[in-house]
Amino acid sequence: MAEPMLQLKNLSVSFDTKNGEVEAVRDVSLTLNKGEILAIVGESGCGKTVMSQSVLKLLPKTSRIKQGRIIVDGEDITDYKEKEMRKLRGGVLSMVFQDPMTTLNPTIPIGKQITESIMKHNKISKEEAKKRGVEMLNLVGINQPEEMFALQPHFFSGGMRQRCVLAIALASNPKILFADEATTALDVTVQAKILNLLLDIRDKTGISIVFISHDLGVVAKIADRVAVMYAGKIVEIGTAADVFYDPRHPYVWGLMAALPSLTKAGACLATIPGMPPVMLNPPPGDAFAVRNKFALAIDYAEMPPMYEISPTHYAATWLLDEKSPQIKRPILLKRMDQ
Image (tube, rainbow, N blue to C red; front, side, top):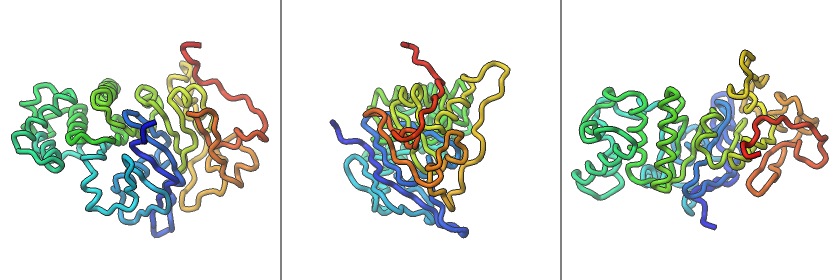
């Protein structure tokens, strides 16, 4: 089997604040394979963005990696300094953020912003870079790319700006793309087009994608595998079919039940009671215990291990322990082939 493009091994990331240490990412281990789309989902503040930005070393100076290793394409980059990371960003690792207008320079033509990225990582002439830039605009579905090349961002709609950001991110043929809430600010129609575009680019280039979102509906359309985070930890991970059709962690049950598509007409949306814990002082056991109606006594005292449900499916909940009482799991989605 081929070596994963990305491996996180027991990664923990903290922030030093005036009130104390905030544990943003806690003991996270995962892999990303070549050509795979791995979705990271969870509520705001669960550690999704911090985890991804720790790979690109884009976190503020108040952050630190407490433990763990980050391995990209077989190379351990955990201790890389800024000079070494500059060689990786764009050429190996790239990122698309939620709001394109915080990424694009409003005063510089789109074409120049794309060619700047290309020339930074490739020894080519301006003419060759421009040709490549036009090709990238065409790849991401911008009509009349030659004419659009010379225009500033304010000439583009929101969806077109996000396509331009994607063109910049892909300009130097990175091996791994992080898409952080890349469709959240877009309307449903444009969102669908961007999702299809990501799938198409993956199929054409073989790029590996980490897709970060809080929207399970969006994730279902694009992900090969899904990792669910809560309070800085991965609580369940598996193929998209594993997580959507056979979820095992009560937190995932709550997220699934809150999907509008599973709510009967006229009924109120389901909610998960309570709030996530403050990570200045994480609870000793399962962080979801206080919001979990199925919580056992051990949930409040000890953190559950990651149990293997199948070779592709794992979940961290004491309900999977052989000594736990049997409960009736909710059936949220049924497979179309059953």
